[in-house]
Image: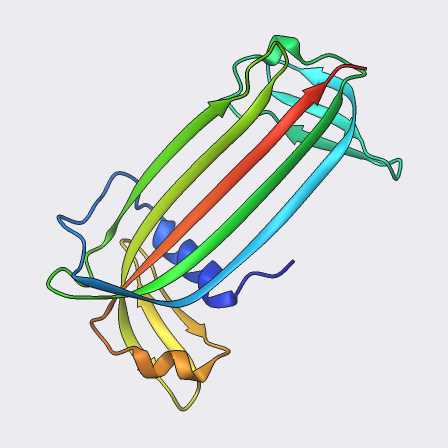
Length: 190
């Protein structure tokens, strides 16, 4: 499971200290320049539940144990019991867009979390988190396949695998990293 290095590093660069800041308006146009996604699945039997720390220990099919955080959005934590089965999938995706137009290069972040519980007495449902991070291209070094990006509080220089992506970039361009995490899970009685 690999994410594109540009996507990860850009998201990390822009995320530092950006919460609560938002650009005044979105740019006129955006063009996708990089992206990546990972999917992680876990299934197993719940062997311990700590409601205070919101963690549970799962024995997975190969016999080892995994500690899983229970998201704060899970409201039916009292329904989780030792011996129940957990099945959860986490999908994380990052898309990096080139931003052009009057507000290109605005910096900040906008986030949103949505919870869709499944009906029934057992904890189950989907949590969707979305975070948009805004930054700016400082320099483009085509000869060495490197780009320097500035976020609200940090500047980072990245190596880009696909040199053709650099042809689309120039200093002053804005970039938007959209990070989405979707957690789908359910507990079943045993």
